[in-house]
Every structure is written in structure tokens, then in C-alpha cells.
Image (cartoon, rainbow, N blue to C red; front, side, top):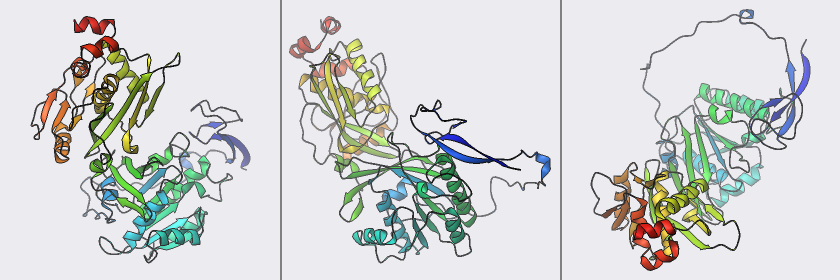
Amino acid sequence: MARAHSHFVCQSCGAVYPKWAGRCEACGGWNSLVEEAVSQSAPKGLGAGKAKKLAFAGLEGGGAAAPRRLTGIAEFDRVCGGGLVPGTALLVGGDPGIGKSTLLLQIVAALASGKNGRPLACLYVSGEESLDQVRLRAARLAVAGSPVMLATATSVRDIAASLDGKDAPQIVVIDSIQTLYVDSIEAAPGTVSQVRASAQELIRLAKERGFTLFLVGHVTKEGMIAGPRVLEHMVDTVLYFEGDRGHQFRILRAVKNRFGPTDEIGVFEMTDRGLAEVANPSALFLAERQSPVSGTAVFAGMEGTRPVLVEIEALVAPSLLGTPRRAVVGWDGNRLAMILAVLEARCGVAIGARDVYLNVAGGLRIAEPAADLAVAAALLSALSQEPVPDKTVVFGEIGLSGEVRPVGQAEARLREAAKLGFANAFTPPRKGGDAGLRLAEIRHLRQLAARFLDRTAAAAALGPAGRRQAR
């Protein structure tokens, strides 16, 4: 007979413990262990039941692949790799109030109305809001006339019974997965066991019935989707909705996609009528740029397959504290520390005892190492009060010895800069066309420092090593 007992499960990583502890040893989270009841039965061997042989198939397949479903929202279709694939599950995460529900309601309204093809049967299931609240949002977005079917439910059994039939919808939105529960599990909604079981049942139905499933996921204070990490492995696509509340821009980023490229982004602008597409994000990010201003540099980056130009701002100020401050927004703080160390050790720039502030304008977060040279240019410009030459873009990776290394897709970066009216570029040594720009190849970081620090500035900014190099 089954014997009921309980154990404690970490809500951050899913680790299981026999007794409660204040700190999870697996992930280091505090107060994340929650008691969950389990039923322990005697294990059964493989010979206890009947098994059937699997039917194997070849790689070529027997028929044509199902066509992708275009939403009519070009930025979203780009992130998904060209549209929605039938029978897939997409997980959408983001901070509270960032616009996840708004975006998904606009998507299902466009699909149900046949904005870019024949109309599809769409179902929107909300576990957090009432029907009237969803209708109010639809009226604000001017999509109340779309034939989207609404429901409010939190029981996975009820939702599965509604979807498991010949008349199953083609698009299903679950808002959110943390509100659902499986009645056979004795745990509160949002716990690791409930999230895993709920998602597994819904994804199984999506594969069997061929509908596209959207799951909305809450995020933790660290910016990760709440619940077990296995949830991101179960779904086919993971999308993060990013943005700064101080900016109207919203970035939809694909961090996992089984049917398209990863790290692809879609740019939206939050308006009073919902989210509007931004066809040319580079022009929007640089719209308020004032040139020439010291401490700024334009970085030509790549987000997936799209070149994006963004402004990097730096401020270097005398420190009033024993330990200088390092404040970074939109970039990796450890990489900034490395660039500062290379400037001081390899170029003799005395910057370590000063406060350094770095910001990526527009609320965009940059992760690629190609931004190293642009960050160094902004820091040197702020230190010397000498602006970067007008209409100049910068990109390149910096090594620990100070050498500037080539980066990928340089031609696409230069073409995007030329299209927006830039005439000059600081680049690593490279082969290929110049896209109509005047290129200044930077082989070592000392060459870039020499462009900003003249003899007068060098006396104040360079340390002993830098003064020996200058002589």
C-alpha cells in the first residue's frame, strides 16, 4: 500500500531535500524550500507490464512539412524564425507589467482575424484575470471585434478536457503557467511539481492535436523564469520580453528556438494603443543622439541576424570614496572591469582610481564581445573630454594583451552604418569591402588611446608606464 510522506523542494532549481533548510545547497537560494506531499509506492520492474515495439522512421519523412502560421506582426514572426510552427510550445517570460499579456492578446487577435492569411481558431485562457478585465484590455487595444474565445480557468484537467477533441483550437494562450494546478498533486499552484506537471500535460496535448501553445511565465528577481529549469527544456521556444520602464522600447529576445535562430530580437514601442512594431530600431535608438558629445560612442552590433546601432555612454569622474564606484547598465560589469584593467596595464591610462559609469542608451542589453572597442572609445572620450569623431561607428573585441581582434559579420555592420549616414568607422584589422565608409583599423588599444589623449591630457591621465610609452 502506498505510504504518504512529504519532502522539501527548492522553488528555484527543483532540488529535493528530506527536511527543511534555510538555504538551498544546490543553487544557493534562501528561503526557497517548500514542503510538498508525495506518494511513495513500491518500485515496479520493467517486466511488470507489457511493452510494445517502437515504429522507427527515416529522416526524410513521408510528407511535406506543415506551413508556418504568420501572425502579420513582422517583428514577432522574425523572432520565431519566420512564423509559428504547428504543434509547438512557446514560453514567454518577462517582468511584471512589461507587456506580455498585451503582446499575446494582439497576436491572437491578428491570427483570429486573418490579418495575414485565413482566420485561425484562437483560445485565450487566463488564470490571473477575469473575463471583464481581458475584455477591457482588448477594448483599449482596439481588438475587441476579433473572434478570440476567452476562458478563465486554473485546473489543468478542465483545460485539457476542453482542448482534447477534434474541434481543438489552432492557437492556445495560457496566462500564466504558474497559476495552473493538477489536482492529483498535493502542492500549491506555482510550485515546482505543479508547474512541471501542468506544462507536461499541456505540451503533450499540443503535440497530439497540432495546436500552437503559448505559455506565459513569471520571472524571479534575478530575471529568470520562475519554476523548475526543466520547463525551459520542455518547450520548443523560449522568448524573453525585456525593457526599461523608463523607456518606451520593448525587446522580444529568443534565447531558445528549435525552429529558428537564437538571439534574434524584435523591437516594439509601447503606446497607448498597445505595442507597435519598430521596423528600423537603429534609427529609433539614435533618434535623440546629440553629436558631438564627449563620453559617447556608437556601437555597430548584431542581434541575431539583424545589425543594430546603439549609443554607449560613459562618465569618468574623480572618486570621493576609498573604493571607486563601477555602475553599469545594459552591459556586463565584469567585462567593463577587464577593459579598465587593459587600459591601465597595457596603455598606461590611469583610470582605476576614478568612478566609472557606463550606460547603453535605449534600454537595450548588449552581450557580444564586439562592444569592447566601443566601450573603450567612450571611456577614453569621457576621460579626455574629446568627442569621438562625428558620424563614426566603433566595433571590435579586445584581448587581455590589448590587441583588437576581428569580429563576425563586419560587412553587415558597416552596411547598416552607411545606410544611416555614418561616414567613418573604427574597426579591427579585416579583409573585405568598406561599404563606402572611411575605415581606421585599430590593431592595438594604444592606437585608440593615442587618438584621444594628447600630450597635455596624457600628463594628467597617463601613469608612469604610459609616460614612458609616450616618450
